[in-house]
Length: 289
Image (cartoon, rainbow, N blue to C red; front, side, top):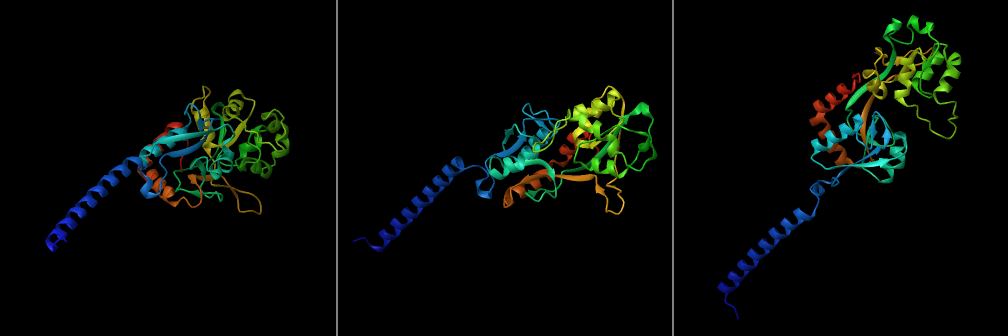
């Protein structure tokens, strides 16, 4: 039988061995477990992105949203993985994010009800774009010079189309608008009008003026050999008997509802990277609000 002194020594040895084992296990777990596992974050920032939808994104990572995603991942100290989609960007949320194929989608409206959205990382709006040599004086849809023009480059279903109706230019512009998509029918099919082509309508003189979402066209206005004017629309387009058509939008990062830890980390990352993100957007030529 062991005396009390021997029992005490054995307990001390056992306690020391347990402590050593615990330290070894903790060391092993730090190697085997993802760096962000303890705070509920994924191992990698998986961003779903369009494979060919410039100027936002492409597989060569030449889009400004690709660059912002890289900046965000660096700010969050997380590896970045793009999950490419051959579908248009409007399907990234429903066809990929909500099906758990990625964890993040860049550049969604801040009030998108399908997802949880980050703090906005920029705000921009729709712009009028026209050739500088036309010497137009246009600041909004009520400008007198609007009535002098006949061919408006707009995207069907956009706030621009609503405003065309309001100023009495929709019917006269109908065939021209259809020509922009090669008279393809949009029924049951999304047809994207290439922003670069839309701006070329203005530079070539085929279109008198464009009214388009600034982030989509700023790069092509910036790079145009033909001098162009780009004028930001007011926040609301005035319509008779209505509250006005919104023409300015906040843009955010989207995650799935319930991914609170990831959303919190993204918000912190966006705040830390704000100067770099703003520099990317200004380099792109996007008017910021």
